[in-house]
Length: 120
Image 1: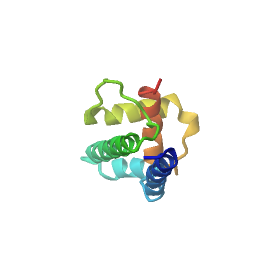
Image 2 (image 1 turned 60 degrees about the vertical axis):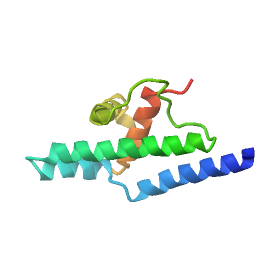
Image 3 (image 1 turned 180 degrees about the horizontal axis):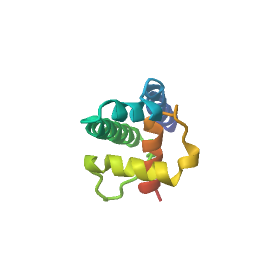
Image 4 (image 1 turned 135 degrees about the vertical axis):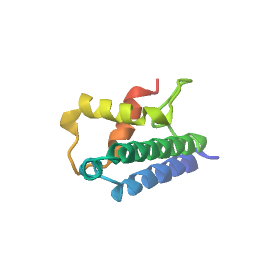
């Protein structure tokens, strides 16, 4: 595969990732989901964040398989679905000034993964 086609494929994967966030849940909507369901809201949020985490893992895998630069690198470290909410909440606290209520949840999770699992 030529370098230009690798760059093209990387652009497609990133484009799909960005496009999919256009209809993604915002931080405000995630908070509303939790508040609107007092008994199970926390579980709904947890499941949503797990889905976001797994989607980003798949996008990252597809990107690297096509020869693109990975978005984050686990480097042999474990990343389990049960860590999704902790990773997400840590990123929100660490960089609270960066995130507005209308930003997509995927953006926060992507930044969290990129800072937790840095590529050297």
